[in-house]
Length: 231
Ligand code: MN
Image 1: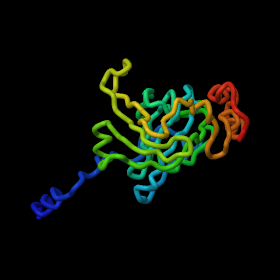
Image 2 (image 1 turned 90 degrees about the vertical axis):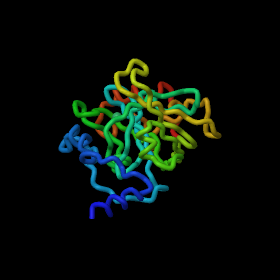
Image 3 (image 1 turned 120 degrees about the horizontal axis):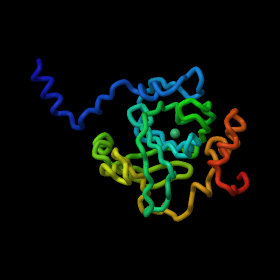
Image 4 (image 1 turned 90 degrees about the horizontal axis):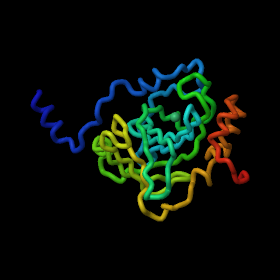
């Protein structure tokens, strides 16, 4: 019996995903769902790989940052990007891994009560799908070098998330870098300033805070000083 299982396993082409403890455990432990409107997260059915969700949420918490999320194994792998993405291939943006988020988080926009984890205003800044440019995503994540194509409203084309060596930029743990590859979507345009509104509701951070009962003055500090008229 044992030998037949072993030989079957050795014939498997790709190695199975690394077993995680409990999906979304850390996400749920950090939040009080009686207080925050963020989704608790349910198990999601697996989908074809062409429909993998890609999301960036602009988050005016204690510090402004952009949460970069890629759907994988039924959750959203997440990195906090303090300076946000850049379309310029010569610019490397620090991306700190944070806990996996539920897929439903990809539709969340609103105000998280002050004093709660991540308290502040969340905007759906970009959303679409992503496609891996590597044959084995689990292996690429483990190696710390994931190349992918984004099909969002704002970000498109080829990108890479690459893990840094320990001590990069004075950090005590490995960080990742989000970098645009050279292709026809590369640009010197500052998309963070040129496209500051929600892809879902066309609102600025201050407008989301006003509508959702958040801190408007704090949220406004995350909007560009000069904003083009509403399209
Ligand atoms: Mn965040």
